[in-house]
Length: 211
Image 1 (cartoon, helix red, strand yellow):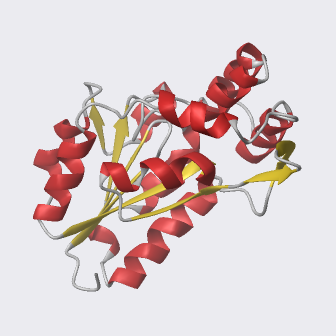
Image 2 (cartoon, one colour; image 1 turned 120 degrees about the vertical axis):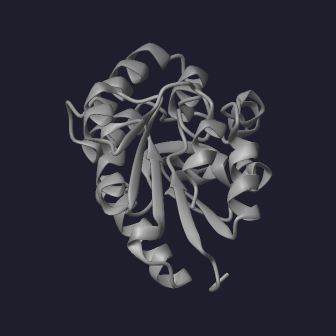
């Protein structure tokens, strides 16, 4: 992979996929409404992402790990995602995903959607149920930007040959770090800060922007 021409890094929830995974998990606990409201506030940038994530994960306490399979079965890939990843590969690029969501779901869906490398949060588990805590450091906006830079350096790709695609406030740091930042299905603050805005919820719309 060291001969890659360029790197495309996407957010996962509401970008790579149409769902917000934490809301699907919260539904298993009967707490979707409160978690959904907290997620929307975080994506608008009204609250600190890491603080918000910890409180939302706390709402998942007691959810059995058996629910992961039910949640995975409900994931809807975003229209155009397979066309975009195929086009990146055809042109000699690499696809990465860095997510404030969870490895427990992303590990199953990322390879199916043509993603080459990915990073996300992990949920702490005890006795086959969620403890309500995140296991390890939280993947927040700063971690997203750091991942883009790290992957580009690892692949020998110049920062100008990177594209970041996201929808929420925690995607802004990686969009700023990239050569091109695309707002996709995005909140107003993200659209205002992006290099370009993709209007339709169809990732294949980004193909003409690939180098």
